[in-house]
Image (cartoon, rainbow, N blue to C red; front, side):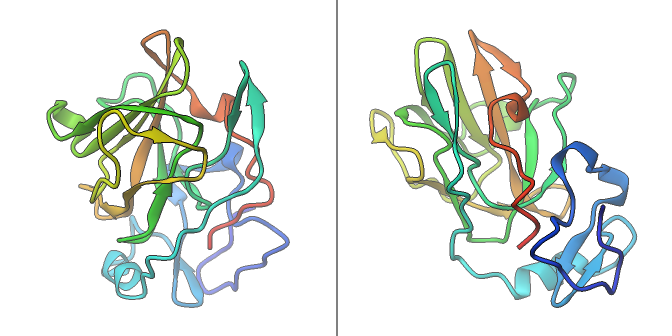
Amino acid sequence: MTAQPGAKANPSQPASPVGTTDVKTAQVLVGDSWANPATTKGVGNAIHESAQAEPVVASETRDIEGIQWQRPIGRRILKLFDPTDSVPGVEFEGRIGETISAAADGVVVYSGHGLGAMGEVTMVKSSDSFIVAYALTGTRLTHEGQKVSRGDPIARVRELPNQHAGFIFQIRFNGNPVDPLKYLPSSENIGAQ
């Protein structure tokens, strides 16, 4: 159940369970209230003004294909996976400057801005079959060849072209983008922060 504008966050109930997020009605926390960014002018700026660079990371993990996965940030998902998107993945909410953490152990195989629609992107190879991409990020905090462990800082959140602060999280299996929610732990205990 998504909180309505003006409602207070209830830590025991997530604001928007992953399976029921509707991009058209996604709610964002503005101060102590919830607002719909699609219909509320100035919401984006209100989010950024109150931003803190402290990471909000989930410690819950899920073991799939021999890899321990965790969410890269303990925030809501604003847009679910759509294989037809220019950058297929899930869009996580964030606050400008907030830390994005490695979702799994691996080696950074790309860190740059040369992959078109992906913008600033960091790609981490977690196995022969899995590459994880953190796209449309702000400052990158890793370099190619660097080993990272689950939970290590990867990049910072920035404002996306849709005027929300966040980033695109993508998992590739054998080179093909797949729905990251099939690998990440449940968000039942992770509401909007």
